[in-house]
Length: 523
Image (tube, rainbow, N blue to C red; front, side):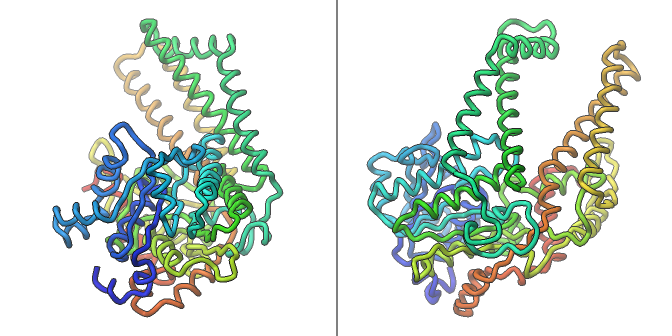
């Protein structure tokens, strides 16, 4: 924690109690580590969804055990780290999808005592069912603000949103409230909540009709054959639940597309911004919008990542030769930002405080406008990396990385669906024949190719929208705030994306981390 004694940001947060949601996730874990290490005088109230073992157990197992805290463990020693974290962390049981956040009296008192609340919890999957995205990303911050009003407290609320609230539109995306800029959406978020809830009920009801249950039962029987009654009933219910979920996923994608968003995640985040601005009252509000958050540039160590993010499935699919092509253009910008720059922005915003005039301040933690990382560079450097560090197939042969031509998204999707239809026909033919010997091997090969193709189609459907996005995300407010810091704090809390050397980051930091996380077979 060198330098903390002279840091103006650390001094501003000294003695503050900071409540944080979403701390078991990627960004939240990094934020907890950074506050413990770089702001030694603050205390943290971690709002954790309770599990079977209790919130303290979740903190110990899902947060503090992570390798992000290795620096602190090394500095304090095992026992010293345990003592420090116990003294500075108060976990409370909370569920942002519930009214009142599901807090008990002790939890309400703990939240009421906080000077700052950083809302990081979100459902970040791009293919979530609509009602799930609504409940977490829209109702979550609404429940949080309503609870703060009920407690009659006005902490500085720092809410993590996403740069993709700009939707699929083209042009400059500035740091301003949506309703004040070119990307305003005319939608009643209250009506969207009710519509999503009714849609879930309709899907559940439809899935339980006699015709639907008969269909699911037939599919279960076709899949299980002569399995017993319990297995058949369980499989039927599994297929019913899967159908309901897919209905909600499709509904979310359709509703998002109708409002010019890539998916339900970006759409519900945009609605949440509008709802928070409308409902906040006297609560000071700052909104931080990251782009695609990836592994760290430097803190707590280069390449730190938790779980697979957006780029990782694409990278692994490319290295395995599954993604033979991808939509976009070589000049297209892949707006991504290392997690430690986002964390630094959140800490600095918390330390600097809300806008002096009482307005909602918006900062974007993005790279595209200041230090663009282009798709052509991504492909070239990823190819360079996998040629030197190939993934090996099941026969211990190195897989050569494919050469992308960046076709139109509709073109590549059509090609993939055509290939899938051919494999489906081949699979049906094989099922009609006695499967033994070479036929069995051929059937297995067809099934493997179908599985690989399904993965590739999923990658293109989910992530292709983001790489062809033509909005340019500006971050002037973030750069201005960074420039206002002391030289020491500018180094400690690095927010400026111009610091990133994308080739070094890709080849030496991010890609090695992806391979380690993916546990793929390499030399």
